[in-house]
Image (cartoon, rainbow, N blue to C red; front, top):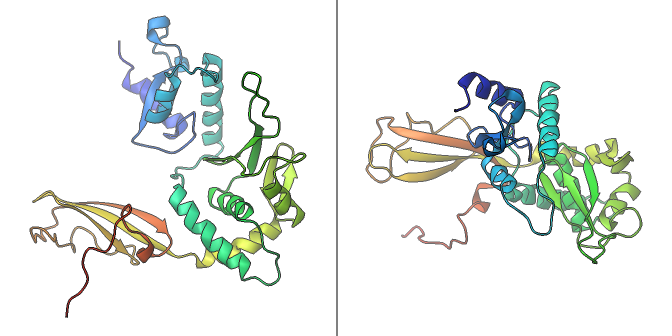
Length: 284
């Protein structure tokens, strides 16, 4: 027996199509998962269902050898937490930033800070943490790396910031890693219980960056006449729709295009596919 459309709609709407494990907004990659599998007596009732993305669904069904697998109790708590966060407006419908976008923002922030004579230089790791806090609009949560067998990891930790997770390059000395101590010492972040928040001083320091960071629009286009896929990068967000595009392959300009679009950080000339090299240049 399949899950009814009514129940599936309720599950997806209560989560606003956020994955209940990674908490990312992935509207077209969300599946409705049985917390207790039907083969183990699970039902299609609302209480036995949760929305998760394809990747996390695969992780749930993976049997690990050195870590704990997901339990029914944990999955229900994850689901209920996401439902509550969506109801309170804490999980808006936005896509997480990619590592590439974060690296661009981090490099721009580093340039800004290093040209600010009023501030001592911060380490690259501290700058990265500050930029991720800014982009994710999330505090830092610190958790210990669990002990595996007889190997103690008491001086190792994981830093969780929104959808990002980082492992400090330097081992922890005392309560915090060195990069956290840097930010605390300069008053750029502050401790609140088990989390670290960006301070007003930290906000002011990066506010100029937020206002001046370059962004551009990248549009992927598919010609419905010849099937060619191509990319347009433009500073003009609202230009280049299906009515104004010409296909470079077949030349059609009859609005027969599918167009996808996204905003990206940085400068257009920095965005090249993969490890590409210059293929052609203008000739006299």
